[in-house]
Length: 281
Image 1 (tube, rainbow, N blue to C red):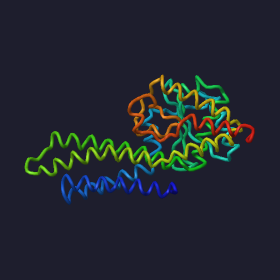
Image 2 (tube, helix red, strand yellow):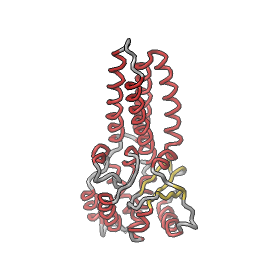
Image 3 (tube, rainbow, N blue to C red):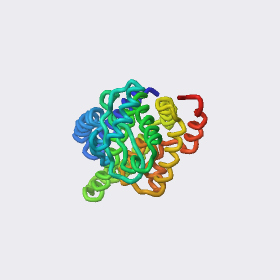
Image 4 (cartoon, rainbow, N blue to C red):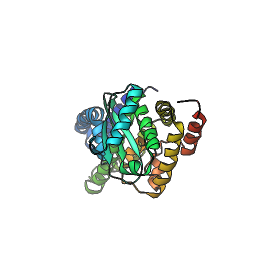
């Protein structure tokens, strides 16, 4: 399915959930309020999803003076791929990882962790950067950013619904009470469904595109293996809704990871990259 269609479906799903939840809690007036909220949240999800994703990941802007090697690598790869220079951000985490976000190549950003710059070689770092630039080139970043934003919003709605059920129960409307409980449970499943809207195939595609961009598939393969191991050992406090955006699931090794798994097996990704060695560059 085209990413634009997926984005429209996701925004429509959020609107439907908000209107339905509003109607369940407060009838027609609630549905109207839900519709208004849906309009506001859909606007924010489309236009500000990149900022929301960066904030969810605690990413901070990094200047060229602070990270000259990072800027040099990104600029060189952008020239090869004929891409505009994205904004660069640094995530204060020792776990090596990275993600790209934005509406389009002209409004894009790449965020890397401190661990990525510390524990990977220059070639491995460029392999990861090339993968993220591939997401930008392939225009994957909008759907992933919107999905993360909407999943976060739905999770928050679920929390509000649970508190409403606990403290706002109306004895005269027991059906409404049960409905709110069910809606809060469904909100959790909806968050999972939205995350799964991000196809695993996009990671294979970005790996292949990134390998051709850098000319060194072996470097990206090596980087993926290292990141996988660090993700199991080094915790990274990140909102689960944002986890699918990273090159490797940063929650790997935690129980919550399996509920937000949108990444294909790392070993399979490495095998595909190794098969490209000697055929690119």
